Structure formats: structure tokens, C-alpha cells
Image (cartoon, rainbow, N blue to C red):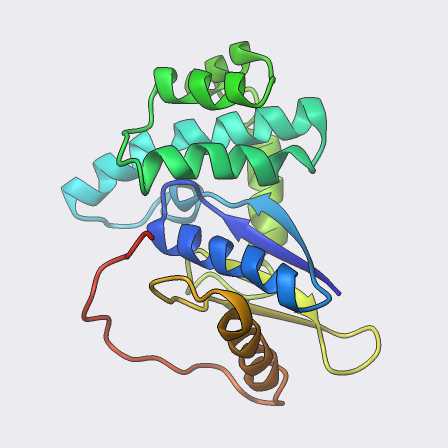
Length: 204
């Protein structure tokens, strides 16, 4: 089963979901492919609090770098680049900036000059295309993570936001959550289960 996840490197909840999906790969016949969405694109034109607007202005950088790398090396590069960037940003608590981009790119043997894309609009058309491909089936009332998976009938697809979970389940616990997510998401007419988050992201 091929599963596609759309992420913005800035989002800690997407990071946790991605780590869960990599655990799912170990215990279920699942192959995860990663794609870029952009919270900056999603929130363009919206009336936002000033602090969040500043965060969205800064969030262009990492998604542009990811798209530039994908354009140069192909989609497969995103798995390791997201891990390299996300490990620095989330457990490592580093701010995104040129030094972080160069370090992540260099770690993977990628062209460090791709860090220049953070301040360029050259890749924005491709970024918007990737973003739209992820968001179109699930709607614009959600952010990231977004997951696309095969549906319960031949040729069908399920697209959903989440799951939002912390810490990321491991081993068979990850597999059981995956089974449950597919079960509810594949139920005709099902839209949402939600409760208030009372803890922040836990990176372990």
C-alpha cells in the first residue's frame, strides 16, 4: 500500500505523524512517500494574529528548500531531507535559517547551494502545485499533516488530516493506530473525531 503524506517542516504535529508513519512501515505493508505542503500558502490572505503572521512569513524558507531539492533530485529525496531538517528543528530545537539548511543538505550529500532557494520565489509555482495536490482532496479547513491512502474499494482513495498524536507510537502500537485510522476514514460519511489537546508535542 502506497501512502502519501504532505508536510510543512515547521509543524511539530506533522513531524510526529511522519515519525509514526515510518514506524507503521516496519509493521504493516505500507510504503510512505513524502510531499510538501505550505502553511504559508494555506494562510495567504487570511486575517491572522501578528505573531502567527510573522511565523508564516518565515515559513516560506524551509518549504522552498524542500521543493528545490525535489526538483533537482526527485521525490525520493524528501524522506531524508525532511528527517534531516525536522530532527534539527523539533528534537534539536534549532531555528530554520541558512545554516540549518546548509547543514541538512550537506549531511545528505546534496548541493548546499539549494539553501539559496529559501529566499527565492523561483520554486513557488512548483510549491503551490505540490500544496494543491495534497489539499484538494481533503479541503482547506485543515493544515498539516495530510495523508492520502488507498480506500476500501478498488481504485478509491481516502484523504484525511491527521492523526495528531504525541508521542509518536512505535512498533505494533503504531500499526494498531494505522488500522484504526483506515477503518474510520474508510467509513462512508465519516468526517471527524477530535478532542482538545492538553499536552504539547513530545519528541522522544
